[in-house]
Every structure is written in C-alpha cells, then in structure tokens.
Length: 343
Image (tube, rainbow, N blue to C red; front, side):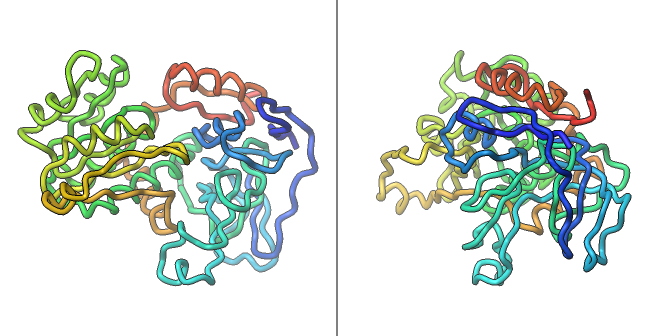
C-alpha cells in the first residue's frame, strides 16, 4: 500500500509499505478520507516531538475490508469513522468514563505518549472498539467526526444551558465546528470574533447571531454590545494568550471561559485570584474526546445537525500533504482533506 510517512522534520515521503494485518480484536480499514489537523502540522514542523518514521493522520473514515478472528460487532464492508484515541480501559480515568485522560493512551496518528501509524495511507489498522458505523454518510464528512467530537466535549465542559450566550474567538475549522456544536446544544445568542472576511461571513451563514471583526473594533467592547451584555461562555479557539484574555474579558460574572485552542506548552498568563473569587468566573480546559463524545459526533453528522461540507476547502492526494501545511501556515482556506484514492 502507499502511505505518506513523516521521515524527518519538514519532510514527508510517500512510501510503499506492506498492507497491515489486523490482530484478533482489530479491523483493517481502507481509508476513504483523512482530515489534516494542526497536530499534523506541529509534528511536521517538529514542535510536537514524535518518533519517526511515522504515518500521520488521525481524522479519518473508510470501509472495513478485513476483520480479526475475535471481532463480532464489525463486518467487512461496513463504512466507519475512526476514533484515533485508544484507551487502556484499565486505569481509574477509563473506569469512570474519562477515556481522554487515560494514563496509557495510544493515538492512531495523533498526539499521545504512544503514537502508532495513522491514516494518511491507503489502509489503517484499528481496534474493533474504535470504529463507529456511519451508514451512508460520506467519508469526507465522517472524517470530521474526530474534531467535532472534541467540540462536543468542549460544550460539555462548560455545563451549557439552553439560552446561554456564547462568544467564540476564532472562526477557523475548529471555531466553526464549535459554533455549530454550541448552536445544536441550544446556545443563544452566539457571537463570533474573526478577522478574516470569508471566515466571518461563513460563521454568519452557519448560524452565528452576530460576527465581529477584531481588526475594526475592540472585541472586548463589540462582543458584549452584540450579545446584549457579557456572555455566559467565552470560548478561545486559537491557542494564544491574548485571545484567551479576550474570551475571559467578555465572560459575565458566574460564567465560564473555555480554553479550547492549544496554547504553547511554555505559555503563561496573569490571572487575578480576587476576580476569580469575586466574579465566580471559572476557567475550563477541553482536551481531546471521550469514546462517548465520538459516538455523539457521528450521530450529529448523520442527522445533518452539522454542516461539514462547508468546512472542506481542499481535497488532496497522498503526495500533496506539504501543500496542505503551506496553506495552513498562510491561513489559506479551511479544512484540507486527504483522499488516498484521488490519484
């Protein structure tokens, strides 16, 4: 099979490899589509250290072509989305359902202490428990189940109630999925702050009640003005300290500031303990997804609650992965999706 392999920092090569053989409790999936994520970008640029050579790609879907001897719930021919987070199911976190915090997590092509080959390839080997049936949903849409599941997890982190107001800072692919996840959960109004004209326009089309251009007006003033006051939930979807501070600045007393974007590991910021005490504003983090989150994300996609197609701006082959990273660096377009059969 052909696989796009990270061989060095800033270097990927399409290699011919032996087709994987599934273990007793595994299935082999012919990859139909795999989204390109910022995690892939950071691995490519060396800002997230991984052992090489490695096949990246963790946002994927495809068709099962072979099953292991012990597999009972999945059959050859099933169309599935792949959850890349493989928990140990033995630690205390797993036992209470917090599989994303597993002490021994393995990731299929993503970020974890242990990373195994992912889905920028024609075939990928996956545990039976890590696939979700997608029915007739397209592979490209189903490939967005993983980032959507992360967003579903984020909504849960802030204990959202119907009618709670939300501000989202950043309308990249993740910000736009967060917008739709919050809208599906009953948030209103939702205000999005985004400097890019096309992304801001798309946010409005996907359900934002108001959009703000932070290059034209101070979002700390413009967001509350658009929302009718400070919001119940301020969401940062970029990963920068100044935008985390913006999200917190527009959060109302008793509200929650959600840190969803991935900050640099050495990033720091000042927090007033008195303001946390007196205003009862809580900071919440949102990391990865649980097995339940993934199942719920697939359900939302299957029933048309999330418009995934509008987020896909580029469809590329296995040979074209560096071009996707170049576009991401220039913030050109939205979601790049690798379609192995496109060659």
